[in-house]
Image 1 (cartoon, rainbow, N blue to C red):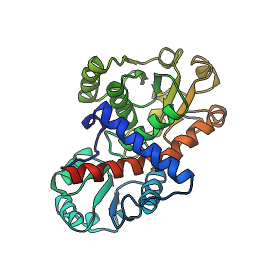
Image 2 (cartoon, helix red, strand yellow; image 1 turned 60 degrees about the horizontal axis):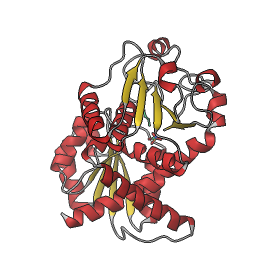
Image 3 (cartoon, rainbow, N blue to C red; image 1 turned 90 degrees about the vertical axis):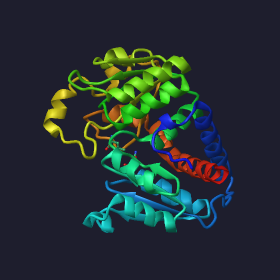
Length: 307
Ligand code: CP
Ligand code: NVA
């Protein structure tokens, strides 16, 4: 049985396979064809944190695949009153076919997966946001973007997932994070090892101007992640020079695309002008969440049957 907790558990070929399924289903839906690949199946969605895109894409995606998704949050379930994750995992496994969780601690997601008998999907944890990166990569492919990427922002779940994706797929990634920030040691070590195999070039710098120079894709994320304990004022001080405005963006290739997983905080990680100039890419990226979520669920369902 296979879970989707981090891209690091997947090969380049498997990632491409999932995207191929997503692309095919997207094409079908654009023609008005809704094939019930997951007829009568149920997805339990457990949210410890807020969500717009993740909830909508999984819920709509499951419906369009002929199944049903249940929205559960930690406040209104017994999780909020202290029922252990391992018991919740066993109960959900006995009634649902798949689970997707958005959690504070990645360790909780692993604990859930350990006790679940169904595929478990990471809908964002403190460490990774793999379902988002699948949509980002699909967007890059659809827009024929080159393979030189700059991630400019916090050393957070999105940064880690960009490192996963680039190092597995053989993309070149320059990461710019503030001086006193650090990338998770294990994540960086695995990325550097993967890069040796895939041929990816990974660079980490504290200078956004170095990272963005001549890239094809600029990616960023909020400076204020959910569950982040550093104060907003401190973050604003730390991220001086990290705002992606027209001046910074002019250092990337002329036709560079810009990706933002959203929600965006204009005036902090991105200027309103740059956001609106690149809104076509950003909202295609958001829409692609729907298509890749379906690709992931259909792929997992198949992998589960074959195991
Ligand atoms: N990008 C993303 O995961 O959005 P939500 O937090 O709205 O789900
Ligand atoms: N890094 C952000 C991503 C939101 C989709 C967070 O964890 O809040």
